[in-house]
Amino acid sequence: MGGGEKRLQNQHKQGKLSARERLELLLDEGSFEEIGRFVTHRSHDFGMEKEVYLGDGVVTGYGTINGRLTYVYSQDFTVFGGSLSETHAEKIVKILDLAMQNGAPVIGLNDSGGARIQEGVVSLGGFADIFYRNVQSSGVVPQISAIMGPCAGGAVYSPAITDFILMVEHTSYMFVTGPNVVKTVTHENVTSEELGGAHAHATKSGVTHFSCANEVECIDHIKKLLSYMPQNCEEDPPVYPYSDGDELRTKLNGIIPANPNMPYDIKEVIEELVDAETFLEVQKEYAENIVVGFARIGGRSIGIVANQPAFMAGVLDINSSKKSARFVRFCDAFNIPLLVLVDVPGFLPGTDQEWNGIIINGAKLLYALSEATVPKITVITRKAYGGAYDVMNSKHIGADLNFAWPTAEIAVMGAKGAAEIIFKKEIADAADHEAKLKEKEAEYVDKFANPYGAAARGFIDEVIMPEDTRRKLIKGFRMLENKVVKMPKRKHGNIPL
Image (cartoon, rainbow, N blue to C red; front, side, top):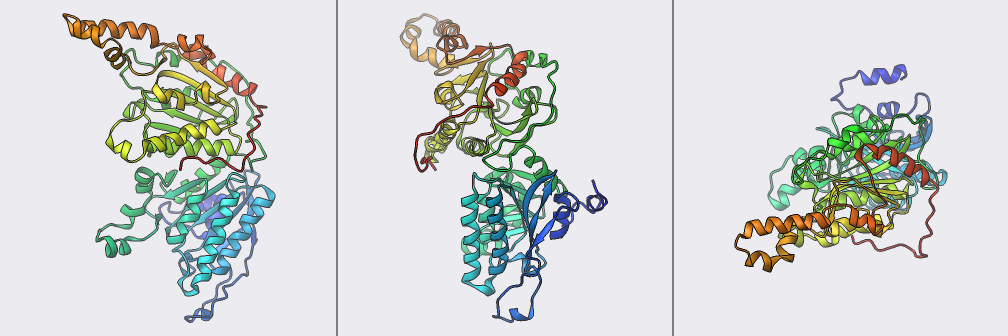
């Protein structure tokens, strides 16, 4: 860490840094090359010709992060509130074009009040020029947006198209319309923090992927996030040095409770499986019944999708399906292999889920995993019931390797419900209904609530001891690293949006 970076790190961490200070922290020391420093706006209305600032409210250029080329723009809220003008937009567009042409990530440090109203339609056109390039870049180069202050109106839609959004608690906001407009139109009294603060978007909307305590933490998160990604869709993620050692993880042997209805924390499983201190969880506070994030196994980047039995029993619902589907599609676009950990009792029932579209939203995850051509490995730790078994990267939708622990239960539904349906008449005719139900439930468990039937059909490649899982994953991902899949010729599929 250079002297300048140490100085910024030591500043009051709750305060806001300037646009240039943010870039100084983000990029390797001395690597930043600015583009468009002398650009000024072209507006002559409403006295604007008297207020001219070099750069016109945004600092743009390129540099390196841990030695890797990165394109950046950093909006300056002190110049017209960071508002987007025609020339401000042209500077960002140039950066996005260069990133596409040269195959390197783009990071936007957003701090803008929206379109510059003094310029009218040309500022709106500038936003659209940026949006168009965000879309053209999608899946070609990684795009990361950090919200470093209030972003309103059109300023929120470019981040929304990018791959990851980071927000800073208490100093950054995102909303299409602010509290004053909301009060006028809907008569709701709401603060900026309640309406579009980091906590609201991390927990309620899922708009932000990371909620950070301060700007220094936010910038550190960006650097860590980039370390798992390739420069572009034509490359593989960086591989870090790793020497095989004792890969047994005996703690995993006792992690599944004896009672199949008792929860456990899937994050404890993840920590045992991945390289030490490499797991970076994404959307940690949103749809907590599923866990997604990046890690490394044997020095190689992977994306993880895992049911979380410690929250809502790990059931799939609308929000968890959307969260995981988008994450899967990012990993597939940028050649990041996928590990899917399964302990799922099914899809969440109820009118709220059905009326709000669990069918079409659940299908998003099914579509994303079926579409993905990166190496895909599944480990079933406990329950894999009903359609959720199919959706969670089953062999039938293209998984390369499917492992199961001896505790795995692969069935259409839980034993009690199944017994009540299959043996309904026998239970009704029995003198002791409860005793007969328990007897038939045990019969169903013996036949179906285990992984061996699926293994006999080849749907499970191997039933493994939990302690051996990490070793199997290291070898499996190495075996699959040159995987090639030829897709049907088409313009693009039609994911159920």
